[in-house]
Amino acid sequence: MLTEVPPEQYAAILDDVAIHMLSQAGITRPPIDPFVLARILGITVAEDADQAGRGRYVRLGSRRGRRSQVAVLLRPEERRERFYFALAHEIGEHVAHDVFSRLGTTPSETPANAREDVANHLAGRLLVPTDWFLEDGIDCGWDLLQLKTRYTTASHELLARRMLGLPPQVIITIIDKGRLSFRRSNVLGRVPPLAEVEKECQERANQDGVVYERESPPLRVQAWPIHEPDWKREILRTEVASW
Image 1: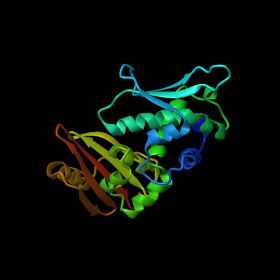
Image 2 (image 1 turned 120 degrees about the vertical axis):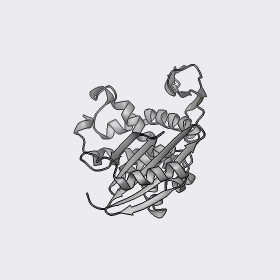
Image 3 (image 1 turned 60 degrees about the vertical axis):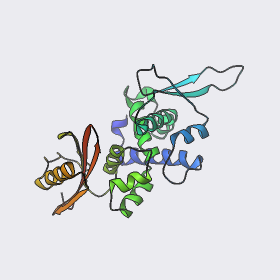
């Protein structure tokens, strides 16, 4: 069923459900704290260090006609952004039924992983709402580091991936320890290999540890070093003037 829905319609429904939740909670600007959102929604959040996954959505049994209590169990994480995303994902699980309802279907009529996909897509939009992110991205020239200071509960990777859901035409690339780990565009067709200008920007960001930008029509490349003591990652945003 989900594969039959036009991508634009599906994205619009996800955006609407996410922004409606934030509006109901009185959240009108980033950063979005999913713990605040969970509290407003009446979701109990607790830690469970023994569970296999990062997050688990459970409904506790009702008593004497009372409604069941919703709870989310989270595995402790060193990275705070992973903790935030895990909770946002489970909140997405909590309201996924609204997305399916708007699509005119139910989880039982969709592939087994459909609910998980919906929850993931909602999580990204709860932490990085589409309309807000588009406005902020344009205002700062899509500077990833500047956007991170505003959307502090989202990881650099999530912010970069969210750029793929917005204009203009771009390619997002992630290099981990010198190896390509992610490369995707927001237009149809095969993504081309790294261009020489992209390689140059990545290498400069890697070696010098500074943001490096270069324009080589039709490409405009931005490369950000996301470096830690034992891990080097570079994230590239390549804007394509013409495809």
